[in-house]
Amino acid sequence: MTAVLDDDQDPKEPVRWQPVWKRPRPLKSEAAKTVGLRRQRLRLRDAGRRSLAASQSRRPRSRQSRIGNAAARRDARALSRVRRSYGWLK
Image (cartoon, helix red, strand yellow):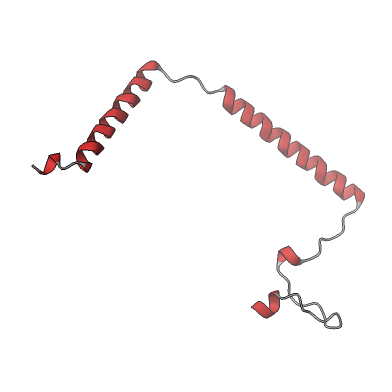
């Protein structure tokens, strides 16, 4: 496998297998480049719209859920302190 991936190929030999990242890129015409860039622009614009819509649809959490989460965190912290101490062994 390493012999295949090495760059020490003799120019007189026929081109042997190369991994995708070492192959030369196929040439594109100007029209093909333009079409590709247009598609990329559309794709990125749509992605931006989706992320904007997702961020705007979020609402602040209700006070009750924030209080509940804080209480749960406090309880978990207290339990972990008890678990790490020797108090529960007595």
